[in-house]
Amino acid sequence: MPAVSELRDSLAARMLPTGGWGYIDGQAAHPEPTCLALLALAGNPDRFASEIAAGERSLQEHALADGSYRWSRGRQEAAWPTALILFTRVVLGRPDWQATAARLRQMRGQVMQADPEVADMMDIDVRLRGWPWADGNFPWVEPTAWAVLALRRCGSGDCPEVADGLRLLIDRAFDEGGVNYGNRRVLGRLTEPIPSPTALMLLAVQGLTDEPRVASAIRYLRQQAIQTDDLEHLSWAKLALAAWSDHPDARESLAPIERQIIAVIEKSSPPHLVVRHALAVLALNSNSFHPFRLTDRPALQPAAPCPQPRLSENGVTQTQGSILRRVASRVRGLFLNGLSALRPMPSTSAVHIATANSYDEDLLRILRTQFAHFRQHVPMANRRVVLKPNLVEFHRGKIINTDPRVIDAVIRLCREEGASEIIVAEGPGHWRNVSFLVEESGLGEVLRRHGVPFVDLNHDEPEKLLNLGRLTGLDYLYVARTVVQADVLISLPKLKTHHWAGATLSLKNLFGTLPGTCYGWPKNELHWRGIPNSIVDIALTNTPHLAIVDGIVGMEGDGPLNGTPKHLGVLVMGSDLVAVDATCCRLMGLDPQRIPYLLLAHQKQLGRLNENEIIQLGETIAAKASRFELPPKIEKMLA
Image 1 (cartoon, rainbow, N blue to C red):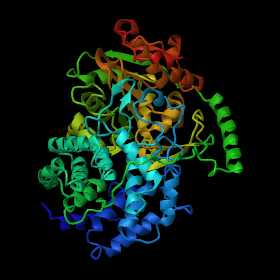
Image 2 (spheres, rainbow, N blue to C red):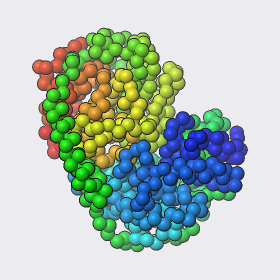
Image 3 (cartoon, rainbow, N blue to C red):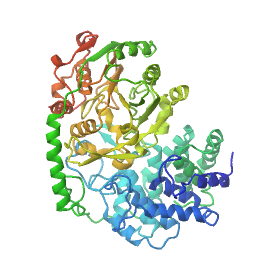
Image 4 (cartoon, rainbow, N blue to C red):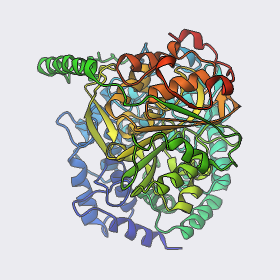
């Protein structure tokens, strides 16, 4: 395998000519991969002086006069890069960071009383502010960990905001070990920890040796690292456990994890993703240079209360708004509401239900038969086709995601139809490490077999689009460029009940088209603005051309993650996504007239809802319907 110096050289060579690094080669510079690359090169600052200087100049393109840093090509409310850039500049020894540190202390999160999650996760202390992904939002683990790291690194570890952040991180951790984005329990069910945020949490809480949840997190991370060959998980684990090397469970795991990192790199050198490349350098070099190691000793002291910023209707704090901007927003809203009333319904609302009793059947043959009815409306010949499956989380033995065998068949259908390019793309709301999900779910093997690329929409370039729905109060939506530029966008959901939306089908699947870099993980802001509102806004702003629903084995009960498998034995296809989702609801025994997002979508002319207006092709609903168990407490969410 290459030595650390060679890996560092190849990382430096990936810098853009203008300075900075994107998440992948060829992408314009982003703050996060640039920060991690600079930290990796900081282990040899003399050799890489010019690259470090160019990278820092790139970061300054995102600087605002108030001291914060916001991605210049992204959503301006998404202020989470501030902490990463502050941390990086302090590590590099730059003296002019005081204004950024002061601003970061002011950028804490708030509790959104309208958030449907809050009432169902009261085993966490919602009074703790921490830091959010975007202005005026609920605080989450990862941005809080970075803010605590940055403030402690610049000598502000004894400030009340850091104490509050430390309390939040410990509060969100599981007694059994680890942490995820920040919810321990939803609707009475425990969620599951995730390795990377656990590592960040452990780095941020260094010195809290008497906290039982810290020891449990160390044991969890050690166990996860031993069981995985994912480079991102391994690298974060090595960095976190090296910072806790005084703990016996951490110390004993360092050498085995390093050997695993080396073995993974030998298979793929250098790593494809810049973040993984930088993390691997940092992890392998952590014995001699560990920028995340902290020396102060924090204490969990009560924090001073943080005044909550008041939000305007656009989600921006009132201090950032202006009367002129609010007036312009109202004018746009009136204009778009008028356009909405004139929006034509889809040219066809036919929906085809096909029997598919098993994933081992000839699914391509079934899809061919279905698509014959929609070819005129959705031609694929010589077009760029983007397939958007439902890839949420991976838990062995759970039926959560669109089955890779369905995606395989759809790829073959697109090839037969003469598509000039096929891309599979997804932006999960929970896991940042989507490469892990692609491999563990079995999708990676399908993509390699067909030579089809995967695009991580969470880190894709965003397109700022006028919000054509206006139900969320947002003037604009930031949608991943890959889906915006698709000639044909196909939604490929798994048929499931959903504990807040009632059902998650082809329209709810579109949450994954909004980049996490703009909305965070999870995309919680879209929830507290109203799940039905967000679904309809996204669909109106960038409407897919076709839906193919994997209903061979669906999920009933506490979906979208914790329900139970339910065999239905169907594939459902249509170009009117409202009609498709309404038909799927009827197949599950749900009244689509009670699903709020479907009612809103129908009112906004997105598609047809009434059964007598939907042409039924293939099997009848009556022949294939099977009543699904509803999620707990769903009645209060239904219309």
